[in-house]
Image (cartoon, rainbow, N blue to C red; front, side):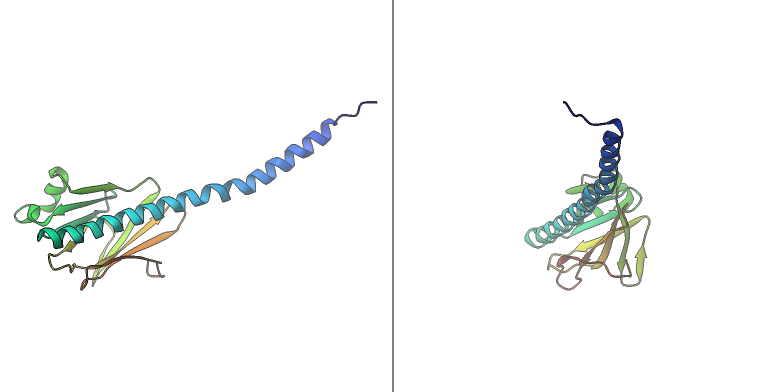
Length: 167
């Protein structure tokens, strides 16, 4: 005698599979959003380190602009800003490095001393002696995770650190 599965048994198996996939799918896709945040943070930090090394080796300062309105990071030679309006140069000038943040990753805020920026432009300058204007840049993703990039004003060193509650 042949034995098969009843319709009820098949439906129970399908319900179990759908319940398991409902719990597993978010765990699989969540790291992808966090990966984009980590990648963006590392790319920005790397570009800033590159800017610092160029400023020292070429004896010409570099200016890193964080455009909160367009979610973009642009790096220019310091001479591009000697007599020009920064917004005009950003709009038309050729950047040495220009990086658009990926979808779901946002510039949250930037802090330097008593300056706290959440819209508009924030700049970090790398000087020819290796120092910088300093500051902290906070990035966030659509899942509420955040990342912090710190620029030491004395050494010009750029570091990725875990954000504290101020971010």
